[in-house]
Image (tube, rainbow, N blue to C red; front, side, top):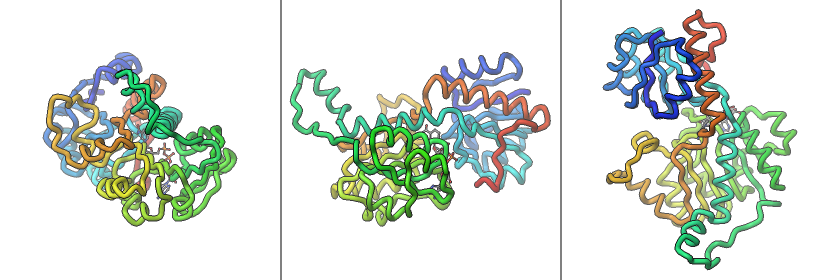
Length: 332
Ligand code: NAI
């Protein structure tokens, strides 16, 4: 099968070619997929896409008109695909449901630790031979309350990690998990979680219901000085609202691996450009904000697993569908 692989970086190329072993003809393309770049998939039966590719109605129609019948996502999240339109156009969609929940949960813990102990600031100070500790005061995680919103695969790993630090873990999920309870989580309402947690971490998918889950009203429910961490999807958090929360001190620490408008920024070296995103620049100017560019998934194990499942999905589609990890309209 001929497959147009969008948004590829050198690390994708290496892992995909290794997993593919020559089975499919992979057309590796650097551009992001959108309505304008869909023409690059001419002559391909399938496309392979990443998190910031645009798989809205217009792109899907452009792909379908060029004979594309299958979309293999190299991600777990599928909020960027119009599944209803895909179904109408007869395009099947598959994803990588789980590759390494540890990768994301561990990166989330890294953000918590760095924000608490201000490691990002300490690193810069010591490089300048400034060994002063003023302003670097942290707190013991042991005994603190951590609120985990979404206890699926990644949320459960994060529960285990934070329980290991001796934290009290509260959880909110419309579908509670026995594994999270076994790991020490206590399920409460989202309001109770926000009111009682020193650290709030988001691990739910982006859906119409969770869009701007953290807005002004929810921030007002949080403990003064709370640490908020989002490693899931940018639009779970209303950026303007968290900026106000940071300015008022209600939010004491903010850790982000994802950002509402990241599609125009992340995964690229823009260091010699003006980025023209005032909200992002405002956020990154706070000393108590730590942002990484959607790298939580980025471990050797995860990259290998993503490539293996993606190639497996292509093989399964080519063979009639058995073994596919499909995403359907109902899943949304
Ligand atoms: P999962 O599907 O295993 O778990 C998601 C959980 O969220 C489920 O238990 C579900 O019931 C729950 N949920 C749904 N609606 C909710 C709501 N309104 N409030 C609270 N919980 C709700 O997904 P997984 O693998 O744990 O991934 C979670 C999210 O992490 C993904 O949707 C994706 O957006 C993000 N992610 C981020 C990565 C990164 O590199 N930063 C990499 C991989 C995933």
